[in-house]
Length: 197
Length: 354
Image (cartoon, rainbow over all chains, first blue to last red; front, top):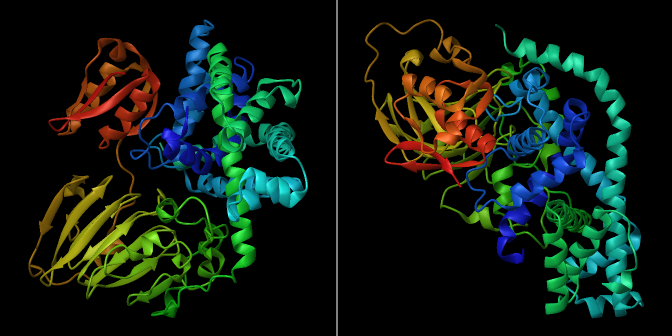
C-alpha cells in the first residue's frame, strides 16, 4: 500500500472524499437498518483503492455510488437479506447512466464547499504543520524546529487534526440525517418528473 | 507508534497510521506492524485508505487556501459579448450559482504547490453568449501544464466545458438552459464537455451536428456544410441537418466526416438547432433481471456486442435503468455489481471475472 498507487490515492482524495457525506447519507437512509454504514464505506474505499486505473471513470461520484451499492449488496447477500429490490428501486434510477441529474450536480458542488469548510476548521497548529510541510517543503525535523516542538508532536498535531476532521464530518452527517428523511419523499417525486413515463 | 498511546476505534488508529505513512519514518518494523494491522481485518484496510485520502484532501485544501491567499484573485477571461438579446435563458444564473472548477483541467495540474482555484465566480457573472475569438485562459497561469498543451487557444466555457481551438478556429457559444450549442465557424476545435445530462452539448459544423453529454471530441470544418468529428473519450452522436433520428453513434477512437452539400430544399424558417428533440434516449429498464438476459437486450439494439465471459456473472441479477444505446455504461455497471471487469476484445465489450 505504498505510494506506487499514488495516482489512485490522489484521485480518491480529490474526487471521492468530497462525496463521502452524500454517500453516507444515502446509505444510512436506504440501508441503514440492514447494514452497518461504516462497514460499507470502508469496503467501498477498499474497492476503490484496488483500482488499477481510474482513466475510465469520468464520473467519480457515480462510480463511488455504484461501488458503495455493490459493497452494500454484497454485505447484505452475505447476511442473507435477499429481497432488497423495492428498497433500492428509487435510488437505482439515480445511477441510470452514470451522470448526475442537474440538481445532484448542484449537491455535489455544495458537498465540495462543505468539505472545504470542514478543512478550514483544522486546528491552527495542524494547518501550520501542513503549510510548512507541503507549501514550504520543510522536513519533519525542520518543521519541528520552526514550531519549537518535538518531531513526534508534529505527527501528533496532524493525527489530532485528521481525527477531528473525520469525526466532525460524521457528526455533521448524523445531524443532517433528519432533514434528509423529509427530503426523501420530495426527491422521489423529483426523480419521477425527470422520467416522464 | 507506541508513543501515541491507546486509541479507540478503527478510524482513530487508521488516522495514526495514515500520518505515520505520510509524515513519519516508516522503519521495516513499523511497516510490518502496519501490514499486520491491515491484514487483521478488511475494514482496517478501508479505514486506512479513507484516512490517507482525508489527510491528503486536508493537505490539498490547506495548500489551496494558502495559494488563494497569496496570489491575487484571478481575472476572468475577457469574454466578448456578441448578442445581448440571447439573454432569455431562464434560470441560467441559478444553475451556475455554485460553479466548480473544470475537472479535466484540475486533474492536469500538479498535486502540490501553488494551485490556483479558477475564478469561476467571475466567469459565471458574465453573459451566456460569447463570441470567443481565441480567448486565452488566464486562470491556468498558476498551474502550467494544461495551458501549454497544443498551439491553439484554450477557452473555458461557463458550464465548465473546455474548448481547445486549433489555428484559425473560431467558435460561437450559446449556453441555454436546455441545450449548449457551439457553432464552429472555421478551423478545428477539441471539446472537453462538462457533464450535464439536462443540456446536451451540440457542436455544429456547417450542417453537421455532433452531440454529447460529457466526453472529449474534436470537430473540424469541411467545406461550407461539412465537418469531421473525432471522438477521443466517451461517445458522440453525429448527424446531418435535421436527421437526428438517423444519428451515427461514434465511440472513442472513431472518426467520421460528413459533408451533406448544399441544402436540397429551401432553407427552413427556424434554424435546425431549434428543432432538436430533447436528448431523451430510449431506456432499457431492468428489474432484477439476470445480467446475461439484460446483455441480450442490449445486443439486440446495438452493433457493439456485450459478451459475458463467465456464466457466474450472467446469473447475477441487476436492477436499473440504462440508455439502450450505451452498452458500455451498462457493462461497467454490471461489472461493478458482479465484481467483474470490462475489457474490449475485437470490438466487443467483454465482462469477465477478475
